[in-house]
Amino acid sequence: MTRRRITKNLVTLGELYNELTHSLTSARPSRGVVERVRERGTPGIPLNSRAVDTRDRIRRVLASWAAVVREGRGVQAPTRNTVALLAFLSHHSGWLAGHEAAEDLVAETDELVKSAWGVLSGRTDRHMVIGPCVRPGCRGTLVAHLGSGASPSPSGRAAITCTVERGHTWTPELWHTLHEAPPRAGRGTTGLTAQDIAAGWRIASGTVYWLANTHRWRRRKNGRQVYYDRDDVLATMRARTAAPQEAR
Image (cartoon, rainbow, N blue to C red; front, side, top):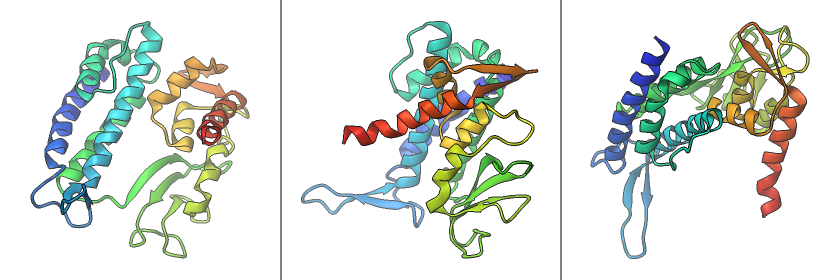
């Protein structure tokens, strides 16, 4: 069943990616999602920015899972060409279905399919599920409300808010503090799940598993759940954050 879901989502993403490509310069693009790309001496080409962003997300997520396969199977992964990445992942779908992160792959590709359909149908989702609430003992879910019209925060601004406790709210200037929030109660004092890391640093789950293998994070298992050592995770993420700044 898991392999079938993975394969189905990959096929669907290939079709939707092509449709998004065709919609980049739609003759009648949806209001509010158009930017003009100008070249010298030209009036500018209307560009569907939401389609561009969604295509980029699809390509990034596929590349992160290709890296998981590359590290896990010792095979050469394709370049960041979407068609090649889809073919590569489809070829290794059986191995991915047996991976500890198989459900993450299904969830992530489910979300990509939903997002792509939303762009193509002209709908704009005003909120996005981030992950479990990071406050100790809280069983709520964090949701990012992206527009003032949908934001439940007292100021009416964009915010990340808990579904259980409205007091657990972070405005945009504080979102970075979620990156190093302590793990939720009941998950151990030093362990972070792949879902915690993906939500906290806003990266694809595939990237989490690739980083775990590349940087040899210590881990422990509780049943089927894997917990990564918090100090190892933070050391890697701090280095990734500092690298672009040092390069300036």
